[in-house]
Every structure is written in structure tokens, then in C-alpha cells.
Image (cartoon, rainbow, N blue to C red; front, side, top):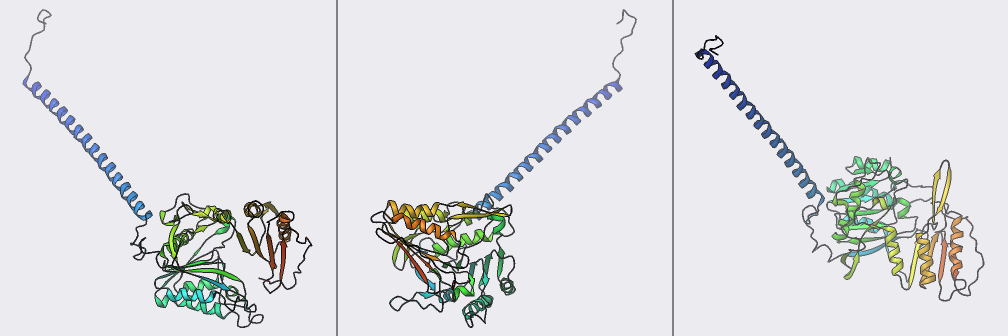
Length: 432
């Protein structure tokens, strides 16, 4: 440097201070940036932890809402004490102008059974019915025939004064009776079966206090209490079975405003018991096993037995006889497609009957209604069943077609029986 003629100078004091200040600023900026990064990292951790806690809380809430805890919301019922004193009673309605009896005795009238359930109600009455027509009737055609329905309807209206909750699930979009019940404190929910299954609601059952139940053919129609042949069962003091049926009601209850079946349901609507895990009960002091089944398959949450599977199970277990009573016997699926009706053979139950009669020698009796809506092909299927036993030994199939007005047509087929064709006039068949 000196050789180049440039003098050598010592660093000026101000330069040293300036450099120190710059270094101090750089150091402070570095510390601030690091602090900022730590703060941001801490905030991110807090947010992540908070999110995890929220997710955990929601998960716990879902788990506890989905798992039934015996004794919490089931009115103090436990699995140990719910099935020891169950009582079952058959209830039946026989039309007033058909006083049929065997040995001078009849079953408990349907109206008596339903009123007895209302007598027992302390907290809740849950009803599923596709029809609500209790409070009106044709006085000119059937004078005084609607009194039982009117009385039952009035008792349902009065449940509010007893502080008993009434809940109703139905497929009716509008009903004057449901509207009136709503005005008197009932909760009513609509099940849109057309959107859900392209079918209709046919379930008829009551659950009272989650202790007593009614399951049967009768809907809430005055004619079911006076003019129609109906059959059902009342089960009293049987909380295990009642709670399981209450879960079926809860399934219907949650379908309000839905046009689809959710793929995931709360465990509170899943079955407590099924075909492979029935509940053991003491019905009228006799030990039995039982469970509830439903249909269609879309309406069967986890572990719920399907009706068709249960029918097959019962028929395949039959050793001696199978007795069948149905309104219609028509193994067809009939749907409307592009303005025309399309029919398809629906075989399961028809095949079960044929298997029982032909392969296992089980005696089959069938009671089939003949009424205004009876499809003409019904008789074709009956005659097809009748022909099974024409040349078989130990084969027994009996079919009786009845109008419900005391007129019946027996069709019996066995070895050596006549194969004459029988005809029944539609004149005199009931209109409903």
C-alpha cells in the first residue's frame, strides 16, 4: 500500500461505532425473527392442539350418544330385570256381524287391548300407523259402528292432560285427525315412503313407556275396530322387547324431511337382538327367545333381522305344519314404468311353501281374502300350488278363500282329491 503512495490510516472512531450499531441491529433483527418464528410455531401448536381437543370432544360426544347405557335414559331399566315378568295376550277383531267363537270363547277384542295400553301409559305412547281414520264413519251404512274408534281417538286426545307424551310416525302428508292430535300436544312426523322406497308404509305398532307393546295388522281406522278381521299381540311388562321395538320407532322418527336412507346411523336405532342373538324372555312364565324384524332391507340398520329372512327361518324350521293367513297371495312385483304396469315374478315365499309341502312333507293351510282389490292372477298361483300334491303321497295343501262375510271357498288338494275347478262370485265381497 505504501509502495503505491497511499497512506495507511487507523480506523476512525465513528466508523467503529457505526459498524457496532449495524451489528447490533442485525443481532436484534435476528433475535426478533427467531422470536417471531417461535411465536408463530407456538401459535400453530396451540391451534393444532385446540383442533385435536375439539375433534376428541366431538368424538366422545358421538360415542356416548351412540352407545346405550342401561339405566340412564331407559327409565331405570336394566338387562337383568327387564324380562322376568313378560305377559303376552292375543288380541283379535272379528266383524260385528260375524260372531265367531270356538267352544264359546274368543280372544281379547282389539279395542279392549289398545285401551288397556292407554290405561298403563305413564310417560309416553309411540304409535306407527299408515292410516288415521278413527273419528269418522259412514253412519248411514254402518250406524253405531264407529263408536270404538271415536272413543280411542278421544283417549289419545286426552293424553296431554295426564302429562303423557304422544309421538306418531305416519306416511300421511295431511290428516285432519293428526292435525287435531298435534293441537292437543302430540308430536307427529312424516315418513316419505314414496321417496325412500317407492313403496308404502305398512307397519302398525305401539310402544308404551318402553315397557308394553302392540304389534298387529290393525291400523288406526275405525273399521279395524269393528268391521274388519284383525289380529295382533299385546306384550306387557317386557322392557327388553319394548326397547328394541322403540328403536324401530326411533328409526322412523329420524326419517322426517329425508328423501334418502343415511348410510351411517346412531347405535340408538340399531337392533339390540336379532336372529342369531335373540333375547331370552319369560312370556306367561314360559322361557322363550324373541327378536324384532323389519322390512324393507333399506329399513334394517346394523343387526336388525329382515322380515323375509325371518319368514324363511320359521318355515324351514317347521316339522309338522305351516298355517298362513294373508289378505292377498300374489307373488308378483308390479311397478309402473313409462305409463304401463310391469310385472315380475317374486319367488321367495312361494318357493318356501313348495319346498315345505313337496320335499319335507309339511302340512300347509292357507287362508286368503277375496275382496274388491283381489288380483285375478291370485287364482292362477293358488291352482299352481294346488297341483303340487296331485300325485304325491303324504302331501297336504289346503287353501280357503274367504270374503270376510261368512262365505268361503275350500280348495283342498291331496292324493285322490278332486281336481274340479271352483269359482267364487265377486258379489258380496267387502268393499274395504
